[in-house]
Image (cartoon, rainbow, N blue to C red; front, side, top):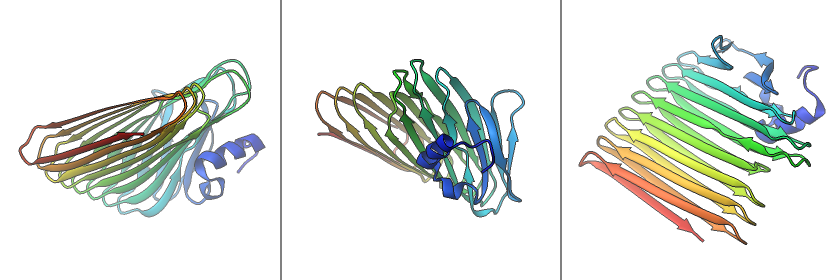
Length: 279
């Protein structure tokens, strides 16, 4: 890492993106609303958007087992950061993408990061997407994270998404959307922990448009103290398809958890299952 990375930055990066692995592939590091370091490879190109804040990531077809890291860190109190990142994954590529955001806030103003990530997978492409969120600091200012993930899978492609909220996030509204074509698979695994007066809302909206499209959405959460969580899952079976959605929450103290499942079958061969447990 270069001179732009301070020790606090390294600590935040290590929480959300595993600092030792960042330099092994392509990466783009964003700090306080600006890109500070970037590396591209022969198969992965990262380009700054010209019409709005964010980057475009291009992965060549047939790229195999490369890592792409795009962490965001915020150390400035009162900052409201909005970024748009688009991923274009070439035919038959197979890559691991590691994102996430760490916020350090020692002051009284709120710090917020909203990341809108869109994934466009060509035929046969595979992506493992890992996203971690973390907050710290002694200030009264809130640490707010509102991620949006949109996934568009062409025939034969698949994506596995692992989303983890580690700790220290005061408020989060998380939206995940998917549109799946023939013979595609979208697997989502979410883990969230809230405490004190924290709030977390998660919404999944997946459309199974193609024949033999499938999705498996799993949410595991723990709510303690006076925190509140709200889980919403909407799955639409528009063809011969399979879906399994499950929410498992552990509640303690004065916490509150709500779960709202919605499954809609628009085809006689749509097989849709939802399970929810709060204990």
